[in-house]
Image 1 (cartoon, rainbow, N blue to C red):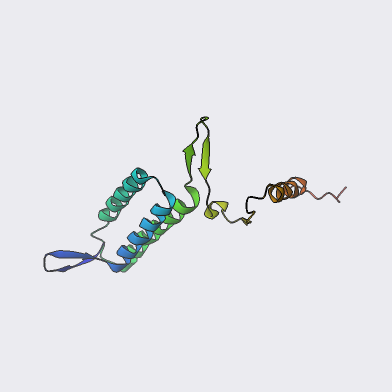
Image 2 (image 1 turned 90 degrees about the horizontal axis):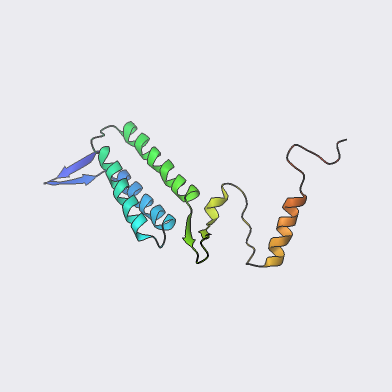
Length: 134
């Protein structure tokens, strides 16, 4: 992405560097504890950036950076990792971002509060159907 040449060293566009750092932070959060996945995604993202190294106009640069930002948001909201348990099942590492727009309440691991909230959800009328309408 458009860069300045100082001596023999090409200096990347500051916006590109900022996006790269933002993406690295998102990858660290999404792939916490999974170094191999983090490392491979970092390499692939760097390859993607290098594909656009010859962009000259600000409009093209902003369009590409916007696409990278959408990818970063998707990584944070849609990628969920899990750990394989001894019984063969997985324990998913769920973060607040996975709620996708819904309210996530803090339950402090209190089973009574969890059951109470689940009962409220179960007893709620289906969308578009009111109990009072005959």
